[in-house]
Length: 410
Image (cartoon, helix red, strand yellow):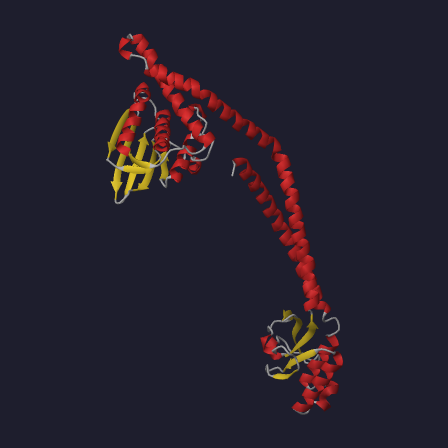
């Protein structure tokens, strides 16, 4: 996926997620508000029923004469329940179930006062006592408990959920469609600029190929021994420019056209590193940078051209960010079943807060050194392609260490 598409989908995803979150909050408040209305609507006419049940359970008031026996008390509770059209359960002050004609197990209903939905039934649970029983600091355990079944609300409950969450999903879909077109419209000029830039880079890379090739052939055909000291110095500058241009060209080729088409093979890393150090020797000599290398005879199964590009970019960075009379140390060693390559300089270093972003494309933290911000991104891509782990440690003013680690073949 291209960077432009990634950016578009990232912005769209952030837009949808943020709006979906606020819609969830809004619709949740609406849903639970409607749900509470639905639950309380089921008990709009139970206040008198509750008082009757409590008085019967307490054997007080006008019901005293009919509640002298438990059977009479139960019969009266049943009669009141049927007359009101509600199924009920009644407990005495000791928590003993006096009567229940509910299909739901009353002991499964929560003890706290409130209205609950159990098996699609609205269930009211409440503690109370007759008005004439006035005691201070009463607890729920000292009161009579009644449970009233408000009836089956499965159909209105399903209708409420369909209405609320159906509208929610519809708004999310509509919001996503609108957001998609808004993001595309807003980013259209940027996408056009990116396409123009990509086309320019491709065309430029193609056009650079011929002069780079001519320059390389011309430089290689010059007999240095026939030049005087003044011309040798000039030739040295031309050679440095040619090598730098070749390195930039290789990076542009990889960035523009992707992976280098070449089969993997066992690369003798000691030999390849030595060759690349010779290639960069004249560059390092220009700043009088010393090179220290300790290379074990280890190999890497990868694409030679790709790994050459990795080494060239790392050595080029070491050259750029190491001051005059500096030191670059290169070590290739084996630890267990792994090979470890380190390239260390004593240059300017990288700030700690910038380290997580050094492998991002077009990321440059020191613009005075030039470049496109492509080198480390190319290195990371190639390392990921060939299962090479790369890391960097750095301290400002003390330099940086790039470490490449890969598994050795048995």
